[in-house]
Length: 515
Image 1: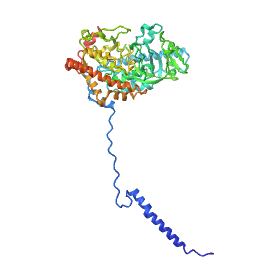
Image 2: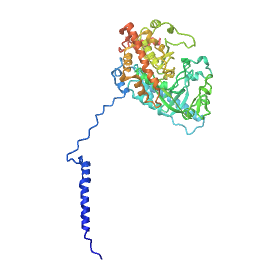
Image 3: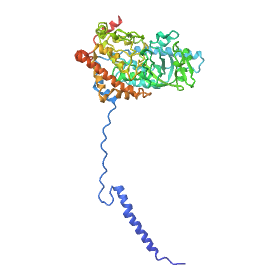
Image 4: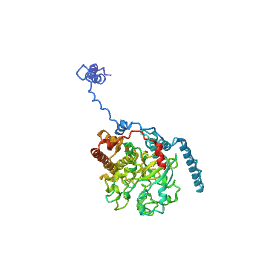
């Protein structure tokens, strides 16, 4: 057996020395740098890493800044006189809900549908009902309205339990002709949809793509309705602080499950068909529209459209429909007096109620709103009789109480100055309206920016194309230029009306309307 190697201790000592040197010169300095922040070869601590520059505070969204501005915080001049009495409204809507439940039960029994449907209760806290109860002399809803926020969400999400033609569509069935093409139901299709909470909305389906402009050769009264224009009109009305357009929101509708399968109207059922592209389509039952080329189609079932909340029933809140003094000629070659007489406003001022109320100022507000959106089809306006001559004007489509806006935003490349005739001929404007227009012309509150941000809240965003948004800024400048010309001619004291005073004698106003 060989003896022990004499060089083994020396090898062990050499390996230990190498390991100690590696620990001392390599591993230990690295550990100190990582744990103690020391730089290599320097016993003193390393200087701290430079801090990033302080981040600038994030600017608040333009829409929030706008609504926080003092102009949007002022209290209404008078007490908030409600349109409806809560007890009377609840009693009325409970009767309507019970009647609907009875009819629905009979309908299911006639078709031998089982099981029988449970009656749907009317909830007093339903968003549509709270919206109705929140209408006051100041507007259709308060500036900060949780009920409107909930209503927009409910119209997007709630199941649809029934669908039907609107009342004016029914009135035209089988009796319409091309001479009636200028009526509210002329060249568009709309349906009344009811939700599971008994709320109702007017559905207007998509007829044109957002980027399509109205052809130059089209007359304003034969233009198609645009669902996105309905949505945009509501948002612009709220930004201008008019609050005269009912809440409107976009939604994707399954035309098979949410219209065809829930409607009890056999005429509506009969106009559904499947296109060669396997899309489900339907059209208006009217002689000059009863053609498949006028149909609206899903893809294959889904179709986007606008939903506008209904106003209270006329039985609860009567309304007047009044011809617009600046109504256009609904003919191919005729002209109205205001189109040829620059002094036409002098005649209007002598006519009741434009002679002794704020009605003319409200007409100017309406003209400004229509000009911004490019609406030339303002033949009538409506107002609640309860609020008298000085009540606000409703921007509605017809007597059923849904928003008007379908013929807006047709041409972003053209500004129809004649829409501003009430402003340019009468040379009056509310002080609050002028101040808000001037505010929306400032870079910090630019109208196109706040409008773009507001429309992003809609599920069908983008609602308007960028050229339409930029056209709002251009048209706003034209409005301010028109006001400036009036002030230069007649003076600010004559042109700018102080509208912050409380309305006088609303009871007397109501008496005038009743007569």
